[in-house]
Length: 199
Image (tube, rainbow, N blue to C red; front, side, top):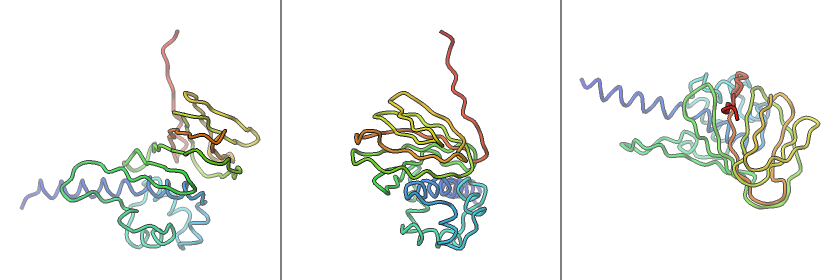
């Protein structure tokens, strides 16, 4: 019995399953859907959905099939299984509402990283959402409009923001031009720390 080969297969499966949570969250964010709405559409409880997205619940077919139907994506796209024998990580961008979201992390739990790409286009009307967690944003290119509670802010390239996601929040183009930004998200309220050397 080749235990090394079996161990490799198991670790490969674990890596694929670990990527499902970030992909589910990116799909939901790209479609601007709340956990409550997904729960209503699938019959899966909000707590189970939250645990799936954070990596604290192992995905299975009973959960993934209704989610694939609700998001109108093929099951293999939802799972993002790599090609057999190919050790490379294949990032699968998710596009909805004119935004592309690329999950950058594959491990379950902890901090999840995403790259967001907003192409040039008309200005959108803010539609703030709330959910559990803590988020950190860093603008790579362009100007990002961020509505956070009663604040309406514009972040330029090189600027960052961090906030509790239980505060109503929304972000979009500030001037109709393309915007690219990174986000780090922690479901358990982890705070991101930015350190710099003293001047």
